[in-house]
Image (tube, rainbow, N blue to C red; front, side, top):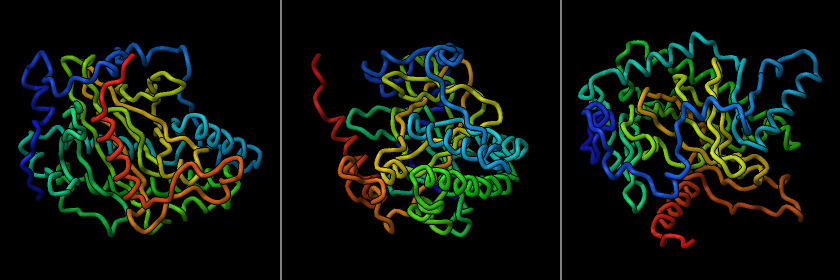
Amino acid sequence: MVTSSFLVPRVESLASSGIQSIPKEYIRSQEELTSIRDVFEEEKSVEGPQVPTIDLKEMESEDKAVREKCREELVKASKEWGVMHLVNHGISDDLIDRVKKAGQAFFDLPIEEKEKHANDQASGNVQGYGSKLANNASGQLEWEDYFFHLIFPEDKRDLSIWPKTPSDYTKVTSEYARLLRILASKILSALSLGLGLEEGRLEKEVGGMEELLLQMKINYYPRCPQPELALGVEAHTDISALTFILHNMVPGLQLFYEGKWVTAKCVPNSIIMHIGDTVEILSNGKYKSILHRGVVNKEKVRISWAVFCEPPKEKIILKPLEETVTEAEPPLFPPRTFAQHLAHKLFRKTQDSLAPPKSD
């Protein structure tokens, strides 16, 4: 059991208390508010750019031309967008449904039951049930609660913090993690070939089967009485190599593409995949780690299951691979460990929040 004396209220508690106005800590900056609109209307829009969909079944074709075409489409989406819907990805609809039901069942528990799994962010223990603490000088908070835990490799898991309710939570989550790890290898192989590298190169650079960590964060976004003023997750890029996302078919993910926020469609039986900072660095910016955020609504609870595929924090130096660097394309990123890259992002975020407002 994990204990915590949390410093902010659970967002679920706020949402269920009947408040009509959200606390000021959850109100976003004026700059952000100008771009927050009704997410259901945004998702219905057929105008403008749309997140690409990649059918991975074609990657298994016996026809070499079909396989190469699929890989080229994946590489193109990774370079232009850095995010895509994956369909026919090899993970059964039944397993995905059971993963979702298990996560939903945990968040359906009374808050006092979920608190038995609470983390203690102040002491650096981030695994478990929590709510986002303010991570900038302005003290702004995000409209979400979450459950965070390492799910692969099996020997690095701490099952003592995993939910015991529902009873099949560990079984279905473990099987999902195993299959996602296989899918990550497949994607990394295609991305390696897209850079003109050997098939296993990117996987080796992020730690291989033994060292690459899969961390799952189940994000719970309660109904919000003033969704036009809040964000479930503020704009950011992922530090991972790859991120795989499931959701409960309620829209909320937005991508910053060509200067505008684009709402991702809810594509049945798909997994959303992001390119993370790690692959962007290794590719010297050829693959994009796209800026994204999560918006909320007042009608429906949204839940998403994000799995971050991360290299070991200290063992690997992240820098552009020498094959991606030329005189015309010098390295865009300095050498750093994964831990140093994370610290640099947090430092930059703090510095940005302390900066004086920009004048018009």
